Image 1: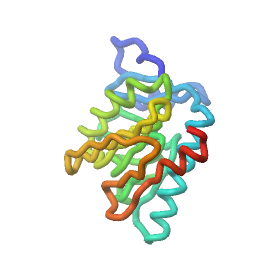
Image 2: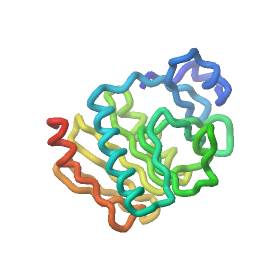
Image 3: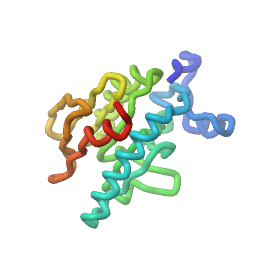
Image 4: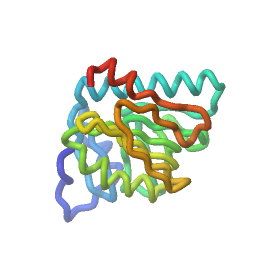
Length: 186
């Protein structure tokens, strides 16, 4: 992810929607951050996680919806924050419109790319916590690491791609990262 543009100017969601077609960017506290296209490995991890979570929700007749980037999340009730998490799980249907999610998703997963490391580990961690996200996962294939922040219980977990990781917002969902690692030769 490239550094923010012109730090003296504050941008709005209208500026995001005015970007040239095909541009991917996020807006955090009025600053635009351009995003590089994801790698194949990144997309495969997103796909495997999405499939596991969607299957669980469907099998349990769950009310939550799962969405993958590009999916608009308007974190705050302002026009200076717009993000596209890799995976968003939203359990309150009142937050959803055709434009995206208005308010904090219940669970967000970000897959770290070399250019997004600082954003995912610091900026978004703080932003998601303060916006009311219940659970945030940082999946870092380069470091063989999954950091789990359960903001409701104030617990943090540090796992590897050899682990099965418990999802905090559900009582009985575990994501087996060793299956993903085997599939992707991580």
